[in-house]
Length: 176
Image 1 (cartoon, rainbow, N blue to C red):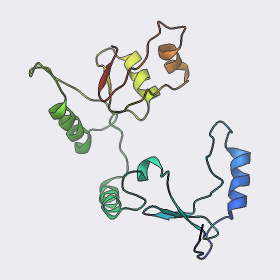
Image 2 (image 1 turned 135 degrees about the vertical axis):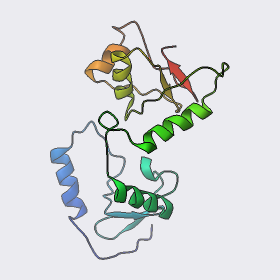
Image 3 (image 1 turned 180 degrees about the vertical axis):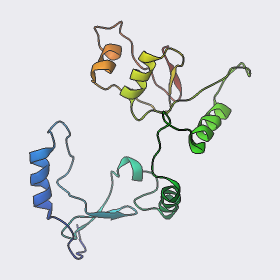
């Protein structure tokens, strides 16, 4: 593979890999030895300036690439208003607007059925919230199950419980 070299920034790749070995558990595996120092579009560069074509992209860059101008502009605009607020502490419009939009597109036979939304960071968080509040089901918009092995989620997903699981498809509800 041909590489383009640029000015070096930060630690060398070997130094970063040594730090990873020392401070990151092996359970978080890594697919390549590449250390990324910067990325644009579908390309990434290591600290030594070698350029790679990013065939796997991180979750946040998968659809549009790294540093897409529309995403960068939206993030910048949001950061100029506020960085992060918790929906459990204050109410903010984008949160309730997203809940409103989900209500609008939710497939239902009975038009009178009301929907409410809570947004969770992970499957474990969603399961935990479901275990502590029986007032709403969990809906997922993915094609795979999100099973964490955290203490609370284990009680919902392990064989020792009543074999509960989050069943997912394009749109699904838990409990079934």
